[in-house]
Image (cartoon, rainbow, N blue to C red; front, side, top):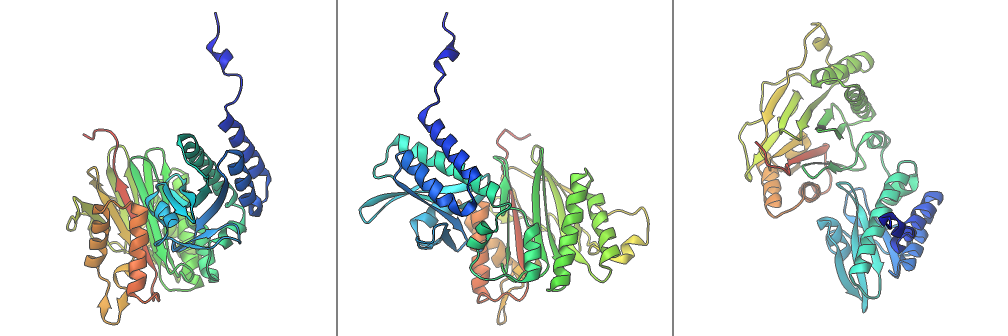
Amino acid sequence: MTDERDHVTEPWPDERLLEGLLAEAHASVPYRLPGVVNRCARAMGLGSATTYLVDLQQQVLVPLDDQDAWLPVDDSSAGWAYRTVSVRVEEDQNELVVWVPLIDGAERLGVLGVRPGTMDAVRLRRCHLLAHALALVITSKRTYSDWFVSRTRTKNMHTHTEMLRAFLPPRSIGTTSVTSAGVLEPAYELGGDAFDHSLTRNILHAGILDSMGHNLASGLTTAVALACWRNARRSGADLPEMVGTVDQELARWLPEQFCTGVVCQLNTDTGVLRWCNCGHPAPLLIRDQRVVDKALERPPQPPMGLDSLLSTPGTARPVHEQTLEPGDRVLLYTDGVTEARRGSDEFGLGRFTDFIIRSATAGQRPAEILRLLMHDIRAHHHDELTDDATIVLIEWKPQTPFH
């Protein structure tokens, strides 16, 4: 009797090509990656290939090869593939070009431009295969290579902003049931704003921070708060203990500083949202294309890091709970978003929430909603924000029947 495994002795062609790409890419210095990808594309019968990464403010797609031109995110076929996370095919000077998004989980990295000559199902599958492998390689290498970072910057960054940027997570994380997206401006002159999100088993951790001031001290305050929060979270601490750790360490090491913030946890199975609000604007709940009035407002608590909080041992921050419904969105933001002004014209909470609701109704993903919203805020302020503007948008869409 013939064992079925006897027929699986030779690797399929795409497997050899993928093996070759990964082996060469892992052994190459980052700046040689464009050449590696191009050679692999030719070996797969895809003609030439060019890699583009999105810049820090998600306005342009920057090629890793200096010989290629930058492409606008909002006005190009490559940008359409990035914005919609979909393949786009076009003709460029009588040549077929296939734009494939580069994605790491929920994070959009850029696009891969392939010129295959002709297109069929096999070539399209190989385009996807090459893009998936390339995204993994880029994600791996950019953790230790400044080359990728410098390629995606369009100008120099302030020192305190560099410190905060080193602490920030990817712009988007998520699964099939939950997505968290964050964005903040001004990208190169941040003061004390930051956001964080992480997934552990079935819990999404997310939060937003806003330290007093707009200098190195405020950046340091936020960096310490993020480090305390993550350390407590990774040690299995619950919300009150996480915030208490921030209170203690800020009061100990930076007694003149404090920060406001919202720290929350979402159970992705049950939809139960738990949060602590420390002197910050209340989160917003968007349900059925409208803001649920005061759904997440609770009695105010003082900011983190105040000595007065440590004068009564044994006291803990109150934790609030709200059960979400499938499709709900939770919005965290700093006051720099709603208070952005152009003369006497304030951006305002109404315009802020209306933009998100309209974009979501139009089918935009959370990360794209925030990208467009932040560009609108910057335009409203003539691209000169006087305060940090930071937003986190959480979307809960369970894939199984919810009871």
